[in-house]
Image (cartoon, rainbow, N blue to C red; front, side, top):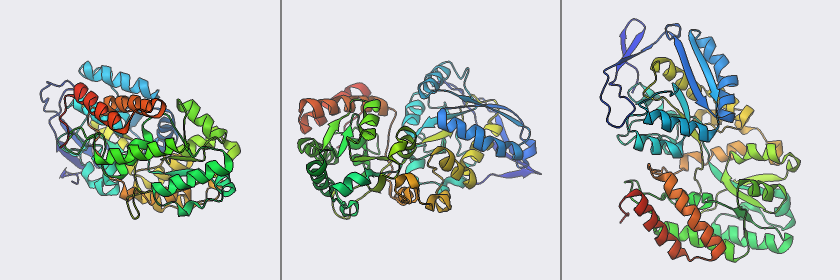
Length: 437
């Protein structure tokens, strides 16, 4: 939906603004977004963590201030957990102490919108629908509230592929282009173990399971919000992971630091995960430059889906903001300007959701660290095929349960069926949700 021109240079959109509590009533406040950038004014505060905060402050802000000279933006860099703790406290307190704009992960936004249904501003009502076709469907679907309204503007994305050690593959005489299915991946893993003694992959959480579920078009919950853990897709995924374990291809890496160590020390030959790992690798293991590449996620069957997403965030405007016009134009500017999105990946390794950025020269450049492969372009080719999934407000609880069950599966030989049935019952008990039929 485009903005509605009312008088002169002012767009006036009337929405009934709600307080942040679950039982709040409409305030009837009118929000006006001027067409003339110089008519937008006032102060706004933005919360973001590490790389995104640097992107907003160093890449976005100078250009924004040039266009909107009368808006004063304060970027407050905070830790991820700190942002969520403060958001929860602010929403619980009726909006007190909240910023005008906040970074939030796709996987977390439903947790907040479920607990605080009126906590975030309805951006569809403010005109963001005019930008909807600029972003992948899978990204936008994860940023909608229960009524289907967009409540956050898409920023970065985490398309998934298999990042692999080119030198280890060469030593084992494995051609990555021959790996089209998970069966192919397992056979290649056997060859790598036999020839090099290294593991094919490491694991310490539920990432690989979630990736395998999404590529099959499902998740821990179905599109209606019902529990979908004990499904055919989940059984297929877990059996595949189990085969990797039984064949001696998978090593349990304990935690994030252990996982980084396994990659840095050449203990594992592949990392099936998101594009953002590239930035982590360049920073944490620069000595391995030229020894990494990427090939598409294997399918479960020939010709099957080879796309999924892990991670990514967005910019949301708390309903309590007292300057929604400035908050809106800042968030819009930070998410829809192609040049800035390219700067974000070039300077910070933040893969944008704005699809037009994928046509830029930078995306098509060969990346020295990744064996001169067009690393980012290769990931971009998978984006339009990423299936949308429904995280629901119980995503975090479900993930905690699944990670605990997966640990028992990998370390204690718990059976596939016991993992799935026990997980289903635990999630049902904690969430009160129905089980998908």
